[in-house]
Image: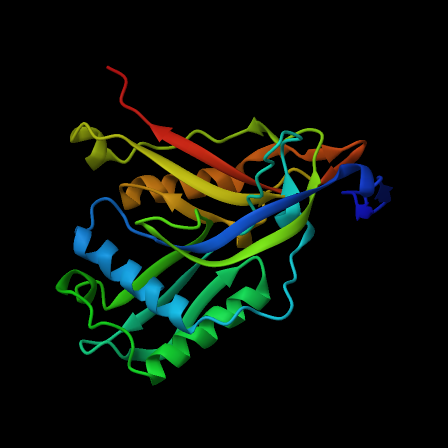
Length: 259
């Protein structure tokens, strides 16, 4: 395989020697924040179940290189690039409140199939009227793509995939990270948090801003600080042999008060 390095010089490595087969079930989970009522999470999962009922697996599934990289040669290498989100709004009776169906997924084919499933479910009047907790949030349904178990209480499987994945030789490493400001109000209240962000580290060690995804945060103020910091961070990129390659990173940013 050939990849471009940061100086635009092609870099070659043996694809076959670095390829393993990964089997993964892709599904939807509730993008629920811990300060939200549990009714909102339940509504999100009901909406995900409805999408599953109307989902049609795409005939073609395209994935960018970085979405197929894995970090282990063990028995169960884990692909991390199948992530993204789904957002749309329901009105009081469970119909689409507008025509906007916001889907971001590393596979555009899956994203298009999800949007089509939402439209089919709406045409069939299949969505459950949302609870007060969701209506308070303008009726917004918030879901996230993830690798999920085939069965489970808090995830809705969509399809099982067999993917040729590329094993990297070394993972990205953080080189520099800016000093963050601790939100004054949260410091006075004695509050801390762990914010988890996911993003693509490019072959030049910078992050791809368009790939930045918030996986976990308890407080909006902490999330904003973490996102601003990660955008300025620099990494030593992942490598396959002598080639720097893009790959996905999930990174926690902790906010702690030291007494």
